Each structure stands twice: as structure tokens, then as C-alpha cells.
Length: 410
Image 1 (cartoon, rainbow, N blue to C red):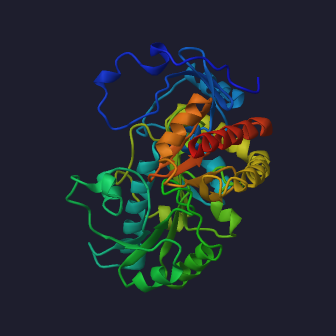
Image 2: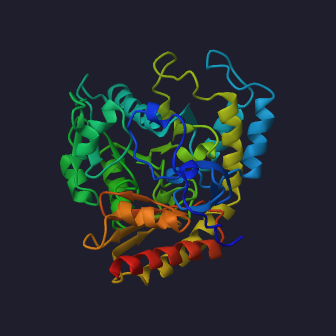
Image 3: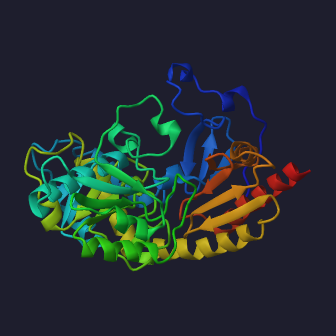
């Protein structure tokens, strides 16, 4: 079925029982999703929508991917949680598969992306003190303006987004922020206490901001020369989204540490990981870090299936092919209500002319036409459909965006 079944919005479709008891930490679009398959979801009134957000890339492989569902169902009948107090038969194979995919030695399994970032910060500091010889309590990590790495108190301590920081201090010290995309600024900020540079290879929440092609290679050279860790937060950009296993692959860069999450759990369970070599991750000792649910057998079983999907390279190639098509279609809208378009694989940041409409309004109108997308930073909208989307459905999404822009221009 190419187009969604268009049905009038009803109270059933626009309200969800019990939501008055939810704290107002989100302002979702007025749709109540009940089921999903592939790139499509269906609301409680039976109306179908093309999912062009994929849960911020957590559903890279589509809703209900049969291989991932089968792995989860098989493990549900066996055991789902042991804690790391004991070994389980799924965690070792998951760690081995993920380490091989990343070309690294070791894995620290966690649950959410923010936990992976927090873990990466702890690893970098411990490495700085135990391997590099930084004076106790002096470790510093360089980050970028416009970053989004999560919402824990330590992570927001180095955010420059007032929505993330207002009324949540005092903040954690030990971070210095420099302009994104400027490798000279990174080098200028390094001193004897610098232990790591933490970057998103593409800034997702900021609006799919793609840095200059020479940026990450320059950061890699600088960090190597100064004996500073390069930590790549590939939680949104990794695992096929940008047409490669990692966005770093697209610029021929190998960081010291990968931070992974979102798609690692296949949209089924939260799975994240820190992946690096033994001389870095090996600085941690038993009892210094962990998680009750991190590395649980259900998550590990799903994680193995995710790695197997990526091992063939078919998903990455599909994202490259569809991404080129998406870029070509979107570029034709520049000057027709769109100011600029940035793409990387099957991921797009689209700057709507702010004089035309805020991004939220565009997303609401897209929803009415059967397409789900997300706005960010006022007038920017993001498209990140599941990689399993068909090309004709991708065209449908762009057609609806074009129609919305035409309506708004009058």
C-alpha cells in the first residue's frame, strides 16, 4: 500500500488514556501509535503514517524486523536478566561480534545512549590518570558547541542549549567547549590536562550539521600527536544511518573509542556500548563501573542480530543509495520554502524559511498528510526514515513536504 489510508482525526486518534499523569517532559505530535511494520506505523484509529524519524535512528532496521523479533522472542523463552553478578551465554558472543564490527578489542555494555556517554567520560578520565599521568582531579575533555550527547546532569554541563541547562545547575566541571567544525580550535584548547576530545561526527539534534570533510581527519591527527583520546559519539550517526557502519568510516577516520546506542537495540530494547581497545577500556577494574541491566541476555541476543544485519553491508549500501535519491529530491525544494538541506546517507536536516512557518507547524501538516517527522531548533526539520523504506515511499514523503510548502506559500 503506497499511500496511507487517510481518515479524519478523531478523539480516539488524538488522545491517549492516562497521559494526564505524564510529566510534561515532551510535547509530542497529536498522534497515538498502536502498531508498526517496516517504515509504517498505524494509530489507534487505523490511520497509517510513514515514520520518517525512526525514533531518532533507534529503528534503523524498521519496526518489527523479522530477524530481530525472532531473536528477541527466542531469548524471552530462555532468560532475560542475570545481572553482571553472573555470566550469561549471550553477552560474550555479543561483545565479540560488536568488537569485530568496530575493529576494536573490548566492549562495555550499557543501556541508553546517555549511559554510554557517561561511561566514555569515566573511561577517558581513568585513562588520563592511570595511563597518561594527568594530575588527580585535573582531567579535561574538549567538546563542541551545539553538541547533544544526552540529558544527564554531567552531560548537560557541557551543553550550550539553554533549554537543556536552565535551572538544572550546579554543573560538573572538567569540560571545555570549542566551535564545531574547527580543528584549529580543538588543538588550541589542548593542554597537559586534556584527556579526550568528544565529538558527534555529525550533530543530529542540532539539525544534521555535517562538518567540513577535513574536520574529523584533522582532529584524529591532532589527538594522536598530543596523546589525547578521540571519542566518537556515533549513537545517532552510526550503525548504517549515514551509508556506512560508522560515519567515521565515510571520512576514513578510526577513533579511539566509539559510543554506540539507539539502533544497537533494534528498536526492541535499549542497548548501548562503549567500544575501544584494551589499552583504553582495560583501565577500569571490577566494581568501578557497571549497570544492573547492561549486558542482559535479552539485549545481547538482539544486539547480536543487529550486528549480523550490518555485517553484510547491505543496510549500509541501501542507506547510501536511498540517501542519494533523497538528497536529489530535497535539493529541488531549496528556494521553494526551504533555505538549505544537509544530508548524510538516509538522514536529512531541512531548514525551512522561518518567515514561512516554524518547523513544528510543518511537521503537524506533514502528520495530517500521513508523514511523521520531527522539528528541532525552531525552523529545522529532520528526516531519518528506517533504512528498509522503499524508494516510492521516500518519494511519497518528499511529495507531501512539497505540498505542505506550497500550502504555506499560498
